[in-house]
Image (tube, rainbow, N blue to C red; front, side, top):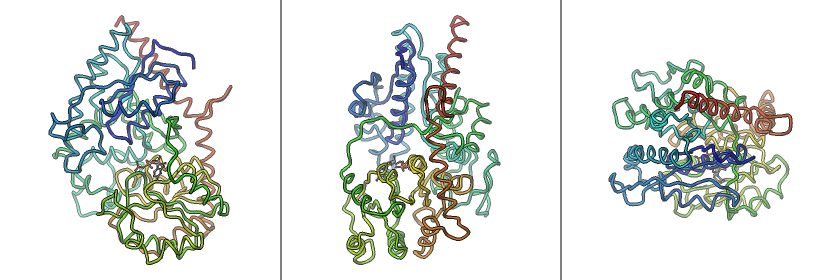
Length: 487
Ligand code: UDP
C-alpha cells in the first residue's frame, strides 16, 4: 500500500506470547494493507525480542514503556506471563495497571512529535484501562482479540455474572447471552468456579472486561460465517462496531522447527486422508491415565497418527518424555515398526501437518489458533478442550458449526479407550448415518469460507477484508469529526 505516514496506529497487547505475536501479525497486516505508520508498544524485554521476527521491509516502530517488575514484588525481569510462577500470576496482572501514566505520556509525546494524535489505539481486553486513556486524549480506541467471538462472549458473560455456585444444579444458562444452550459445570475452569465477585481476580477482570464494552470497536481474529452468535453478543454490548477480520495470516519470520522435514517425510509415506494429528497446543498436556487410554485407543483404532507428546500433568514440562513409563509397554516401538504412528516430542510443524493431504482429522484442545488453522485446511476436529474458552470453542464447533465431535473435557475426567476409539472412528470413517462424512464435508466447506474471507483482488474483497476496511473508515471519520470540532 501507499505509505500514509501521517496516520499513526498505536498497537498495545497484553504481556503474554499468545497476545504479543497475534498483535504483531495484525500490526504487519495493517502496515502492508493501509500503509499507516504503526507504533507497537510493550515493555522493554518483550520489545527487544521482536525485532528479529519482523520482515526486513517493515518500518513498524517498536516502543518500550518502562516497567520494573521488582517494584511490584515480582522477580527481576518478569515481563511476560510465561516467566511468572503460578502463585505470582495475579500480582503480574495487577502490576500491568502501573503502565497507565507512561502510556498516557507516550501518546501525548507522539501527538507532539507528529503535530496530530494517532488515528487509533488497538489494545487488549486485559488492558481495559486504555479505554480511559484514549477517551481522555480524544483518540479512537479498539480492542483486538486473537480468539473467537463466541468463546470470548461466554468467557465475558461468565466473569460478569458471578458467582456460579449458587445452586446445586450442574447446568445453568447465561443471563445476558440467551442464544447459547446451557453451560455445564465441567465447562467452567476451577479457577472461574472459585471466583465469587469479591476476590482479587473477579475485581480486576470485571473492571477490565467491562471497560472493553466502552471501547469504540472490537476486532476478532475470526470470520462472520463461523461466529455470528458471539458477534451478536458483543454488538449488543457495544451497540454495533464489532468486526471479524480473520484469519490473520502471520508474516512473522519463523525458524524451521527441528521436526519439520521428518514429519513431512513421514506423511509423504502415508495414504491421503489417513492420518490423525494430535496436539494440545503450545503448552498444555493431559493426565497420565488419560494418556494411557489415548494410546490404547490409537492402537485399537488401526489409524495412522502423529502425536505431539509432553510429560503428563504433575511432571516437569521441560523434562524428557518417557514413553516406557507413561504409555503402554512397547507402544512406541510397535507403532514405529509398522509405520503406524509417530510420537513427536514437545513441538511439531502444525501448519505443515494440517496442510498435508495425508492428514484426515485433528484431535485438538481447541485453542483458537489451532481451530482456525485446522479449518483453513478443511481438517475436521475431535475436540478435547482443557481450559478457559477452549470449552466454548469446542461447543461452538460441535453444536453450531458441525465440524467437531467433543471426545473429552479437562484433565481430570476419566475416559475410556473404547470411547476415544469410537469418536476417532466416527470422524475418520463414514460412521453411523454418515455423520463422519458430513463433519468432513462441513470442514471442507469452511476451508473455502475462510479462504474467501481474506480474498483481496481487483473487484472483490472478502468479508474479513471489507470488515477491516469498514473499521478504518469508522476510525478516520471519527478523526474528521474531532478536527471539525477544532480539537
Ligand atoms: N503449535 C505448533 N506446534 C505444536 C504446538 C502448537 O506449531 O506442536 C502452534 C499452532 O500452530 C498454533 C499455536 O502453536 O499456532 C497454538 O495456539 P492455540 O491457540 O491453538 O493454543 P495455545 O497454545 O494458545 O493453547
